[in-house]
Amino acid sequence: MEFRATTFSYGTGARPVVRDLHLTVEPGEHLVVVGPSGTGKSTLTGLAAGLLTPTAGEVRVAGRAPSAPTTGPDPHRVLIPQQAYVFTGTVRENLLYLCPDGAPPRALEASLDAVGLGPLVDRLGGLDAPLDPTALSQGERQLLALGRAHLSPAPLVLLDEATCHLDPAAEERAERAFRDRPGTLVVVAHRISSARRADRILVLDGTRTALGTHADLLRRSPLYRDLAGGWDPQCPERPPTGARLA
Image 1: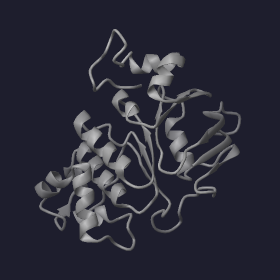
Image 2 (image 1 turned 135 degrees about the vertical axis):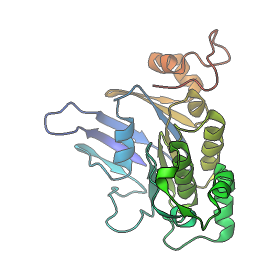
Image 3 (image 1 turned 135 degrees about the horizontal axis):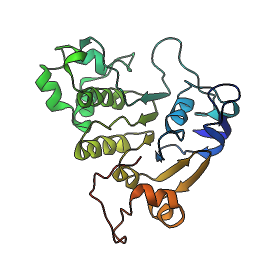
Image 4 (image 1 turned 30 degrees about the vertical axis):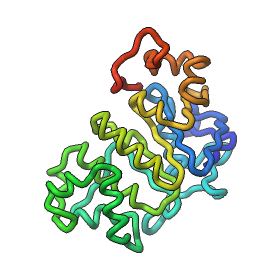
């Protein structure tokens, strides 16, 4: 995934949310995106998913400009937003939504186990039980959407605060499942523990950016130190593991 001098603003004359962004995410890499509210984190995932078109510059995913699919699921990438989409149908139909060719039972069971979805599926009555989205909590909808994304064949997964309604332990399990899954992972994070699990971290601050590892950014990014709240073994003040990013 590449951002080449990418700029984006919401409307003519509006202040750019993303300005002259240069970023390359290598195949198989785990990138976490952090920053205060309104600094372009969701905009970045929208550009990567082809839902938004750059005002200037370009975005490339596997060498091509991304675009929203006109029919069926996107075979190259999957975006799970904060408000997870679950539809009326069976549990199995929801989980296989991004697999137009279906999936073998072994793969389905492996995804259920990886993201910790098994107990919820059992509670709902099994894979072929009818699903009423209105009867699910936001966390339950997120778990189902995460299982669907994990099962998807798409090599790029974009999680835009897609675990924000899970507790820290469930979030860690889900993120580790995606890290172990073949492909590239981009996570817009809301807890500092997510950032520590990443290969690299992108810090957005309006039109300014910083990129590096957790330890590196603690040294050279005042904003990241502020967001992290000093959560590091060598820092004198350490908030609890579930400390949240802005």
